[in-house]
View 1 (cartoon, rainbow, N blue to C red):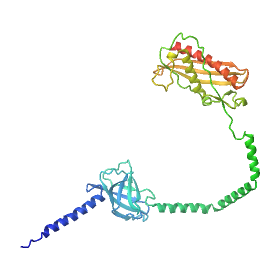
View 2 (spheres, one colour):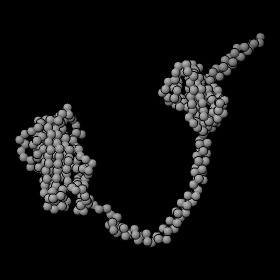
View 3 (cartoon, rainbow, N blue to C red):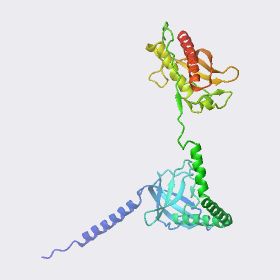
View 4 (tube, rainbow, N blue to C red):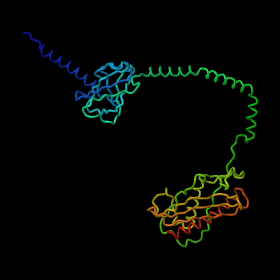
Length: 367
């Protein structure tokens, strides 16, 4: 007995498989699926080479739809109108940027959407305006740039020829006078000490040692931030009044900028007075009960009248709440018999010792 083949069943299975394959391909090419779609009109202000209906639409690099229609603008044949269909959940705004990108080695064009914050009015058809030159490929852009360069060169061909001729004349002159130039350079090298930079001499401010017995100690923690000063005092150079240069101090440098040097030596002075209650820098761990704020007014050698060194500070004591509880000016000077670095530093040491002793006594009494 011969068995009949189930042709109807086989045909139905093959048809279902073909439909499933087409559905799978459609799903792969439409990441937004078959869900709700929204249609937008896009206006390109120039050619869109290679763009076809069915091309992808990317939002921030993610495929959200495709191009459904392309056509020329009736009122301006240079413009191209396109209709795109994207997933309704795509955050397209009135100011969303539209462009054209070319992907892969073959340069397949896709419409790109980016950003946007202005929400369009409801039920109002949204038209997106692409950026000028959005459809221009890299090849076209390179050709346009080369055309502009060629135009600039053509417009300035005369001055360019003159410039090149002047360079040639200058190079010929250098070639003829090579020996003279070598002699000039050799003379400059000898005059400047063979190119070896002069060594700078660094001087430090000495911390006073004999500050008297610690009759009264600090009852609370104290911080001394870096003093404030005008820009002229933010230096390691020796300053003079009237302002000017002194040849004997050409190689002089303080060990640090004047504000940082004063801060460090004040903290050292407080430590020498009472190491058990030494002040902190503001960058140290913890928050102090009080801050000693210093503003440097003078730190210089005065040459008008009797030559002397001058130190002038403005001091304020501030509590945790920023309230000024005490303030005063501290000024002193020291006679300078000889204007030279070693004598000047010794005079600054003596003047600073008086300043430090005065500030320590005043601070201990104020807190």
